[in-house]
Length: 381
Image 1 (cartoon, rainbow, N blue to C red):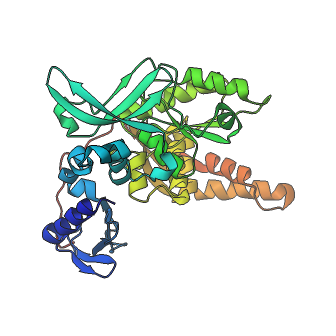
Image 2: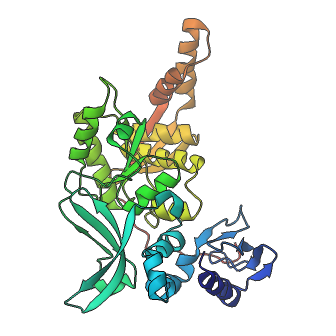
């Protein structure tokens, strides 16, 4: 971690959130969510602020959310001072951004990128960039105050339709013999999954179905054996729509599919890596969210929710409507007894699901998704 950046973050936490430094930790940090002074972080790597009130709050915040101003001028902070230093380390700014701004282990991704420069002639503004090579061009991210360029925080040069960015450590044979391939939107998301131990590729945009890459992978696959495709686009509306569309198209082409979703539109996969929320246990949860998205009927979604967290009745959303699921216990017991009579053996998972399907009552209670505009809260309760 850059020493000056660590110093700036530490002092800001002491100043704005009343942090107290003690040994290897900053303690008594005022939690940005519940405002209780029970949050903490490491003094060595003060990236994530975690609230110690695990039952009543338990939120975590990345320092980029608290102090965005520290993560806007990468060239100013990381550019070597002399020409000799710049020649010795031509990617110093990109390295700093990827390590301290994205949470990546540079040893794992060394040689995957170059440091470049982009200049907008209309605005007469320029910025250092980190560039990744694409099959027919490149994709580069703007590093210095990207808001100057409007909504454009990065740019892709070259035709990438039907293609994807693949981490350079993976060959087509590696992809063909993998159990699963995650298809995510951003290159940084793919790198985040690589850090988490998953094979992931970036389709760059939720509008880009990687048909050419899938065709190339299929040619390398053994007869009748293909990897499962996990569609893991962002969790906004465009990403969710793309997942459903891609799933249907891929299944028509003979691919087995799954899906995964971040828990909120607020975070992408790289955000979750930086918040230490891309563990194996977390991945299971995100795959469950993907299963819910892919459910082809309201009943199928309700059954997935019940199996994940049993409750005799609950509400849920499906296809822009609100539904209610309720388990008829008398009907369920009757179904269970009918299976037990046949062999006397305990129910299999398949028999249990059949019993739940038969006894679960699904009713649509609203044909729209109401959006709360405000709420009232009693601060004491």
